[in-house]
Length: 190
Image 1 (cartoon, one colour):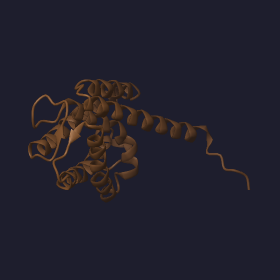
Image 2 (cartoon, rainbow, N blue to C red; image 1 turned 90 degrees about the vertical axis):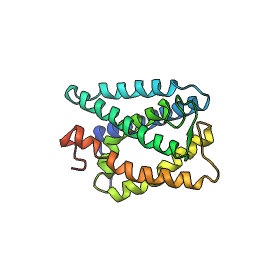
Image 3 (spheres, rainbow, N blue to C red; image 1 turned 135 degrees about the vertical axis):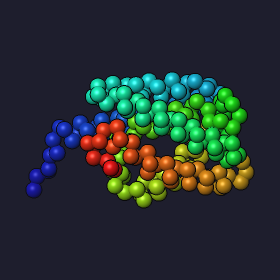
Image 4 (cartoon, one colour; image 1 turned 120 degrees about the horizontal axis):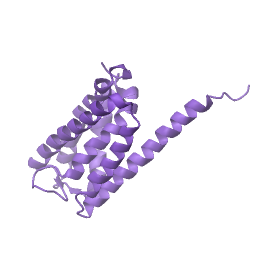
């Protein structure tokens, strides 16, 4: 039997997804690394450029709704992480106000919106899996930020990691509904 060819469209989509993942990770790393150095606005600037670049690839009629969804996701994440900070579970470096999530952490919530359309296709119909990934991936990402020096946990760290796991276990399945709200024919959760 010969090799099966999936054609140039599949290869192009796979390469596009890989490129998006690599750039997403680079922007995340740049935002967190700059926050670790006390540079409060580098992360938001990087995320804004990435989000705007992504928005320009969308159909014109979707851009406004998608950018509104990005802003609302950033606001919801800021409230959630500010609650964690006010409760003493985490302290974000490069903060403007004590106990309030810094602009760089807000920008990371906005950055998540770029990943949602692809993730939504995979996970929107499996909310339990999305909750599990959020409950594990959220604390892992925050722990990486702590290791990089962008935030700190009190000792012992496990209550902070547990609180972040609960936050992301709830938030991630809800976030995956955003693409279906922005574009009802996107095929995500309805």
